[in-house]
Length: 600
Image 1 (spheres, helix red, strand yellow):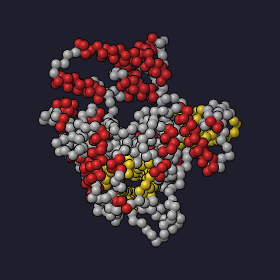
Image 2 (cartoon, rainbow, N blue to C red):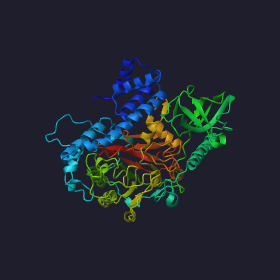
Image 3 (cartoon, helix red, strand yellow):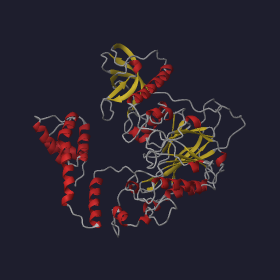
Image 4 (cartoon, rainbow, N blue to C red):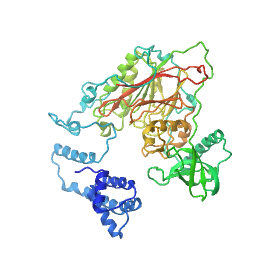
């Protein structure tokens, strides 16, 4: 079966002599081809037939949606009904036949899927005894499916992970690492001050009821966000008042609102709409960005725009104010000038903690060895611990419940680091199969382990205070989510820095609205627990995207990467932090002395 891509679609259009005005039409045709399992020539034949029956329809997005509704959806229904009748005529005699039949179906699906879990290039060599994963899983003894109960060596370890190179290599540095002693630290552990910034009463400490959300409540939360950030911008930029969004005016006006898209598609420079709050008419006005020299926008962003709206139907923006960050943390009791606290070493790692082709926790065991060797004061471990996207988890090829696997995994971490005495912080993930898939996400509930003074169960997101240094933590891949939605015209800037600046200036751990489809948001809880109480000194934002360390408007932002990337080893991060007073010139000195991203 030939590969479907934009080039094949384009060549088919040229062959039939069909003109198109927008590149988005190619993307739409490609999407319809993949979703309906059609080759490029097949879908073009379907379109030509449809166009002829409709008196020569022009190829555009609206007509493609009509084509999908009237032709492709009906073909899908016919295909599904025929599949239901096929089993009566199909006889599979043996288990081997069943395995072969299922493999053929999987191969067909894989040919249309996009690798999303750090997939690796397939080896071109032929193994001596070829056997598929499905065959091995169905024919192997259940005892060979490793559970983390004892990290039994009877499980089949990942060959690619065990054969990885560049172990312990530092791939990214920040600050001066000269003289930094990573190995054999002080190991102060319990003596380190660590608490949730919001306090035990105001922070998210336990699970809550969700799926009872009304649209009116969501609207109220979004309105409060617009008004709160708008008042800050109005005061800072000395704006007298904001004008209604759709009021015609011959002079320049200033409008406060939330960036939206004029349709269900992806935001682009022609589809930007500004939605004003109820105080200013609660109306939508399309925005013309052609006069702006540079901009960076995403859906859900609260902005102030200045420009002309002579007809009341379109704002020609001439100036853009994107937002302001909160102040940094300042301790209530100032330290003495001569009192210089010792630096605190922090290790940060993000799951998954198993390779994608095995449920052996070898990467986690290696991380525990690193903790024992380096003896950090604080270890921040972010989920997923039992990854819902793992192949064997998806197929339920485990011998224990998901909760039991997670409990034994955490117990192994606690027991394995007992000699170090470091503080342990566990942050859940939306991908933890045993936990509530809601955002904000409550902390893990392990009553027996919570009695240990070293263990802190934190929600996602949260702001930690470690010896007077504020750490912002979230396990949600906001970089990936916002990177797919953000549009910009900003020469000389990089996307990571722009997105991180948006997080800080919008004062939120997840400012994107609407969220991605697989994000379940509870907006009432989000208003209470998903906002930044201040600008953190260090912001930890793990992502599938490439690891980095960047300083953005005074905040050190770290993407430690994931401990495993598909079948191979990934990375983790280590930091030295120290709360210090202002420098001699009165400027704030960053509490992050040095930071590194290291290969496991």
